[in-house]
Length: 174
Image 1 (spheres, rainbow, N blue to C red):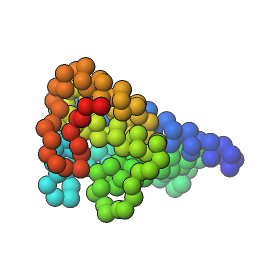
Image 2: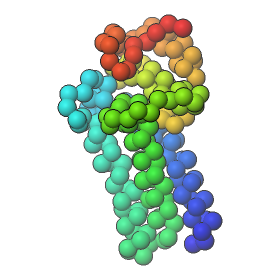
Image 3: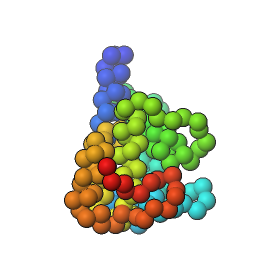
């Protein structure tokens, strides 16, 4: 496989993973997989939550594709698809777990409009502690926070948590 084709396949996989992540978050994690994801919408006690099992579940296809492409003689493109999935996982971990939820200590403060937008959109997702009524299911692409606040208001703020003074602020009026 040419270097250009491999790079294109890798980047295309990373980009398509955002759509996959949206679908999985919206219709699996907030659907039949809520029994694991619910822990992520509650205050965490300790370093781990049941939701962390999704990282293991989503790593399996990447590992299998990398193993097959590198060691088992499968089509070489599988290596680059597996690497793209792994890269998206690393980006997700950095954004979601480090920047938004501060599961690892960091001094990073979002300053760009893009980073402020996706952090605020994710926090608005977390103001709803129930399975239904959430907004913003993407991770790296997010609607404008003003639109998300308007949607939460339109829904009557069903499931919106009361202010607890935690890092995830409660819904606020404009």
